[in-house]
Amino acid sequence: MWLKRQLERSALSLLSGGGHRAPAILIYHRVLPAPDPLFPTEVHRAQFDRQLGWLKSRFNVLPLLDAVRLAAEGRLPARSACITFDDGYADNSEVALPVLQQHGLHATFFIATGFLDGGRMWNDTVIESVRRAPGGAFDATSLGLGRHATGNWDERRSAIGALIGQLKYQPMAQRLEEVGKLARLSGVDLPQDLMMTSAQLRKLHAAGMGIGGHTVNHPILARLPAAEARQEIAQGKAALEAALDAPVRTFAYPNGKPGQDYLPEHVAMVRELGFDAAVSTAWGASRGAADWYQLPRFTPWDQGMAKWGLRLARNMLQPAARV
Ligand SMILES: [Zn+2]
Image (cartoon, rainbow, N blue to C red; front, side, top):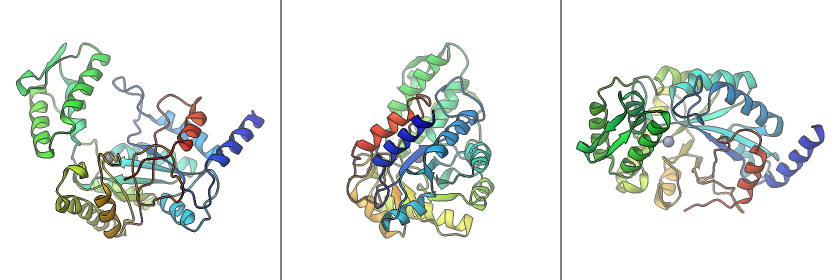
């Protein structure tokens, strides 16, 4: 066991060389209090606890901004990793924070400010509508979104996938309208407390966690006129800085796929608006000199712990896309 871990550490050191290279950056969204029958692979408290234990025994977990500054100076320790969360779910503060604190680990939380204090992201409206919809089928043919079987959790999950797939790349205003109609059609009460309150946001910040920008309304920047995209990025930063009375230095592109969800002009905006670093959702590792405004990230947890090292190693060998 000891030898295996030492070999694993050596391999990870070789792959995540430190120095000028970027750290391995992990993405989380939610940490549920308990397993969800609708999404059995979604991370929950006990699993998060195990993952942090695993991570801590193999990596130097650093605050994202510290890791970026050390790497820029060529002083990043080998096997450096950073933990990040996107969107601003209430469970980040209520479930994830105490587990991070038990392990003495730091994470950076990217918050879409438009959903603070009772908001709900459109995909969650779809999920919670279909989760709660009564009967064996959800009929959205009147909205042109088809009829979907909901007889068991598998069917409900497929229905959600199909509906989100149809709605995902619609223009924002049209999508919001359709999603509103869908929620009314389901006829169920939807939760108002999925996203953080301002008090929960301040709790994370007061605990020493990093807070980063993630726009106001979580638009796909590449689909917005330039002036609106800039406003989304700038207003999200300003809202966080006002709520925290502190500068916000890091940013995560909504959805985050280079060339699809954001473009070179958005990278330039993020730089001009005074951020020090930004993260994408491209997998893989930075090649050559890292681009501090397009740091790749990945989600290694979906298939359990056993294959983690292998998946991480594979990820680090694969060059990341950028625009
Ligand atoms: Zn997001």
